[in-house]
Length: 372
Image (cartoon, rainbow, N blue to C red; front, side, top):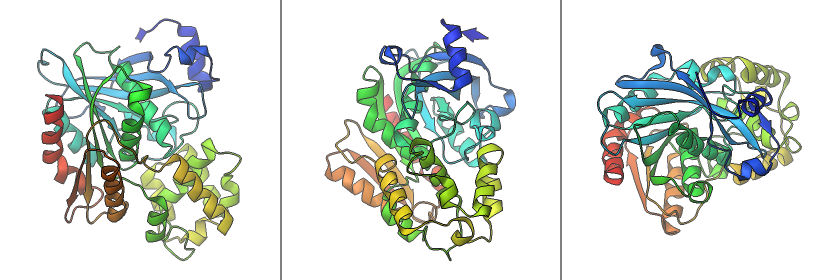
């Protein structure tokens, strides 16, 4: 197994999950490879030539350095002279528990079909699991800055693994990963100015949280319970433990579901557990707590609206019931008004899952134009 220097420090990081911010983090300790090994063949994507599971350092959501896991896939065949262009994949919601990390748990059929399209188009895929999924410490779900650091740092680490990776790269994300992709675009120039970043692809982008929460009836006690609000409360409690105590927000049933969510359940199991339940069965928050959650979401999870230096592709299905389509359109319009080069496309009749397959030909064409 390949090891990089200063093994003792990295083993310490692996055990404790993070260390306090020090001069070492300022000297570029994020994006360093901790270890690498072969990815089991049953976790390979169709069309893979070589595949690895890696652990690498990244910037911890609460300051300092942490260790994050992920996977690297290169296409079968001979790489171009300049190396395979890289698609940094930011995955959608899988849960909070370590057992949900895609580099060990595997990927959905939807994601496999989408990613094999990228491999077939000649892109290497580097796919973070995100902080706290598969490595020590909790997962700060929908903390956009933390996810962006994880995405950028696996790109850095991947070049320490495989010489056939080229310098040109894009970030590609779906749902939770679409939010991570947009935060990556907003931070990459300051966080990793030396990387040859070419563009951002986001599908099923969650945003405009106050509007979305109203449309989804997220705070209506009589409305059907959904998985995402539970994960959001848990994620906010990671980075804001003083302001957000999940025990104060949940019923006994909700606390039991969250306990299992943090340890053993992934998305499908959580969805099964809340099936037929109402928000009132799971949550018990006051008006003040509702406002606190929305304020923190605005701070940590809302897409930064500014003029981005590079192009952005946003694809949104009109039949999406997980993400509110008009909220995605609003975000795209705000970014365009701020001066960002945004290619926004609605896909009529496509839902949160089918948008990926429907949009893939447009996305690959858009990506090739920026990485060729």
